Every structure is written in structure tokens, then in C-alpha cells.
Length: 291
Image 1: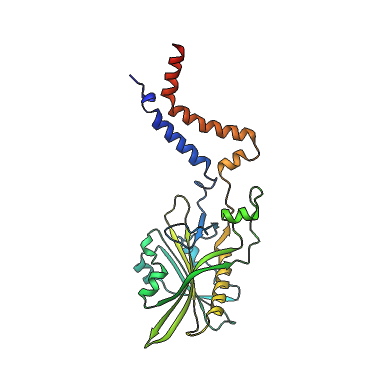
Image 2: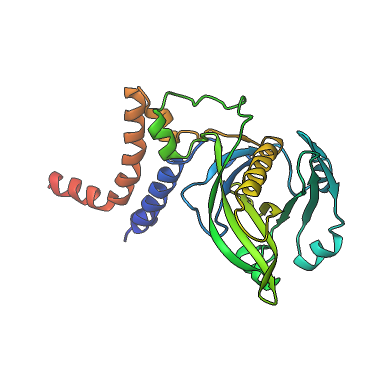
């Protein structure tokens, strides 16, 4: 009769092998750094342009949201009462402000909304048409973040091209851009520039945050001036919310980097599960050799 270990050696070995692979290709912050998030333009999947950041704010904390700066550069904020809107959306936390600048002829509208319920996030591409707007244009916009003095160096040297491939912060954040408008009797009565992105929580978090800025644009003609103004404002808000977090190397990279001993250790921990998987065959082979 086969022993328990012989009977289930393949299952035990495969589970152990999977665990080893997961651990080797994880990073030190994968399971332990609760403040690590990613900024991305897509809600349901990774866009390939996501940026790893460390949050300065707890977006799920009402006190943190109320403490978000009223003054950003030469902009001064004014709060909206969001209680009714937040309740109707099922959002946990919502901050909505209009920021005014003496040098600008119109305000910038700033919104942060967080929820563990994805239904609270009506994507702007759906929300604006539902409110009677027509989407004139949908694309992406790179937001330049000027204040990057706190950008940390990676653990070991990586080429510029490799950094970009791996998603290291390069001074810009990718956002979605919408140009939307409303019409009455065939005439455009309102036009807006909208920029937004999502903040996705860490490994153990289901919370999703949307950050959006928007501003009124001329009903006709170019909107580039308003886009530039809105983009610059969003760039100014980023350092108040995040600091870039260099993508950490995987455990296997840390263990094997310039280390023969490390490479042998990795080889050993990969071989052990394989030995367990093929234990019955190895045992039978030994018996055959003895005969």
C-alpha cells in the first residue's frame, strides 16, 4: 500500500513549486506595504502605462480628504456639499472642489471619489453621455509633474530604456482625456475638458479611487489653452497626494544579483519541489537498482 506522501507527492510538489515561484517573482512590498498603489487610466485592467506610487493621503479617510490643501500654488479652493451625490453613488468618500486663480477667467473643478464598490464608478465615458453630453474626443494625456525632487534612486543601476519598459516614474502621469459638449437647438451651449485616472489599492485592497479635473472650454474653436491649464493644475496636485515608488526588483533578482551562492540557493529551492513530485519514480528506481 502506498504511503500518504507517495499518494499525494505530485499535488504536494506542485503546490510547493507554485508557492516558490510566487515568492521568487514577488517584490518585498507585494504583501506588506499597504500604502503602495498604482495610478492607471483603466479601471478593469492594466493599461501598460500604470505607475507605482506611495500614497501620502488615505483616500478612504474623510479627515484626510477635508485636510487636502485649499491652496495649491496660486489656486484657492471652495468646497461643494457632496453628501447627497456620494450617497446616491454609494461612494465611501468624496471630495469635490472648485479651484479659482486670479490669473484665470474660469475655475477648475476637482473631484476625488473612493469606494470598495466598483458600481460607484460610472466611467466618465458613460456618465457624461447620460447627463446629455456628447463626447467629441477621447484620448490620453501625459501630465507633467514638476515637483519630483523626492524621486528615489533604484536599488541597483538600471538603464533608462529598461526603466521605461518596467514602468518607472519618468516625471509624467498618464490620464484619460475627454472633450465633451452639450447642444441646444443645434448650437453648442457648453464644452468641457476632462482629465481623470484611477488609483488602485495594493495586494489586499479592493478600494478604487478616481481623481478627475475638468474645466469649461470655449464653445467653438480650440480648447488647447484650457487643456494646458487643466493639465498643469492636475500636475500641481499630484505631489500632494503621491510620491513615486520605484518598482522594486523581484526576490529572485535580489537573491541572484551578482551572487553565485544566491543562484545556487534559487536552483536548490526549485529542485526540492521537483524531487517531491517525482518521489515515487525516484523510489522505484532505487529499488530497481538494488535488485
